Length: 321
Image (cartoon, rainbow, N blue to C red; front, side, top):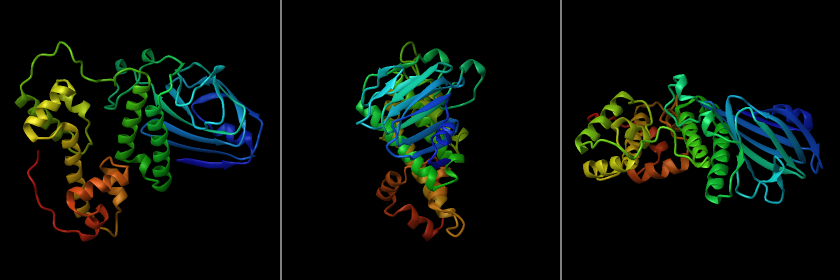
């Protein structure tokens, strides 16, 4: 992770990524600029805090798409000369002109998603973008989406700053998948790889569960998503939902959460509290939102993850899926 404070504007400007261009200073109020940046499985996030306005003009990187969100309500942001309304997102497609102009001090954050062409034989499981799907644009305001964008970047920056191993962990891959899903939603198109909902042959409930169980066995060390289960079962997510409720009494999302809670609980019991931390165990199981996870864990097991780690009770063997 990069996290730096600058009192020199040019030094700050050369640190900003995702665009090859020139940044011009405007109306400095505070001669202070900062940038935080993290790489989550190829997805880059940045958080900029500027004590001035600026004009940033250039070209976006060829190998990905930039999603730029203004954060300061009292400042006017212009994207290609057009005002970016509050809770709107500026999208810069690969290898396109990029122009942001602000008159006064302001903050911003961005997500850079690599372009993955499915024809290239990529083996990524996360939702991906292709160049054909992306056009440079400024979206209409959407408060819910903007809040998710802002919160995701701020939370992930805080985690990356506190835990140096986060960016190389499974939790980083999980977070990147969430960011890819968010940016697909911003584009207004379904997540890549989402099962088609028309023209499917009927699949029995038993066969759906069997195919799901096979995926559990093949990907036992991975945090799976509902979309991946539906793809493996060759059914829609709605049909998968029905099958899981009939079989387990809960939907696939809740089943996956429960499954991972138990995997974490067993890992904590097996870990040595002198050699590992709760954070490291959670990262290994794709979890990074510690507060939310701890609340779910305590509701299920009656204690916090840290208490399980310190107790080191014997592991009870349970049948595999």
